[in-house]
Amino acid sequence: MAQVTAQLVKQLRDMTGVGMMDAKKALVQVEGDIDKAVDFLREAGLAKAAKKADRIAAEGITNVLVEGNRAVILEVNAETDFVAKNDKFQALVKEVSEAILKANPATLEEALEVETPNGKISDVIAEATTVIGEKITLRRFEIVEKSDADAFGAYLHMGGRIGVLTVVEGTTDESAAKDVSMHIAAINPKYIDRSQVSEEELEHEKKVLTEQALNEGKPANIVEKMIAGRLNKFLAEISLNDQPFVKDPDQTVSKFVTSKGGKVKLFHRYEVGEGLEKRVDNFAEEVMSQVNASK
Image (cartoon, rainbow, N blue to C red; front, top):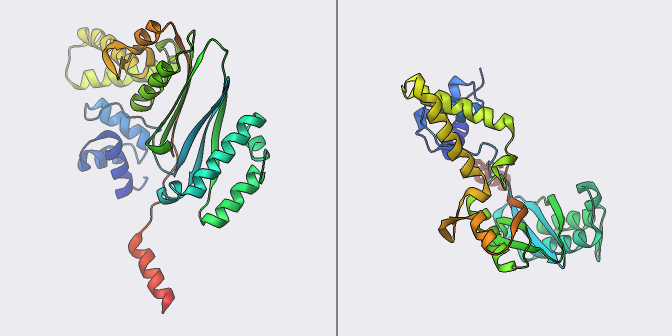
């Protein structure tokens, strides 16, 4: 049986909003598997749909750079938020962004070999690691191209904590495209349209919703209708086009973009550290180790 630690309980509580005992019970029930624990709590009607992969952890910043019909979005990680706000670190991110957009590498490995005015990106990062004193990594990037008839929506939230790059085709209204990116930063849709949702994900959600309805004691003959309604709500919540537009909730994102003569072609949303495990420091032990070292 897997050990259920206090840290794991806290992580599940942060993801689902349930109480400590409910979180611990769920983790014990599924032998410490946090993703299964989320499903267990949802089936019991105790938790909202949690984004199971979104375990925000590592520090750093994202950046979006647009030049003409090409743009790049990337994420560079550091160990602490303090370093992420450092001028040297931010200058490094800008330099890496410019070099990658110019060289157009296809993979992360190729990107690290790209030359900047100060040497290869891998060497520049290694030098910055030495100077700044923390491990720095280029985690991911995406280069996007558009036509003259389309618009980029570039948006950085909280100084790069979240970065969004959107392409709206059929219009050159960059302001409207940026508004869509702001919406994506705030609401975090998974897809542009519900037709992009896989059968596997639909079946998984249907199973969870079915168990949830049965556990609520609903008669079997109305469960199917309930599932259809809840599944439709689920699809609307994760699909960009169906979501109420944050700047005007009376219309959907799709209607807003259509009113500008456009259509969302693609988007990339980076949130710093998503999916990475966070280093947990025991500050009491750290202080004691420093005290002992000074003796």
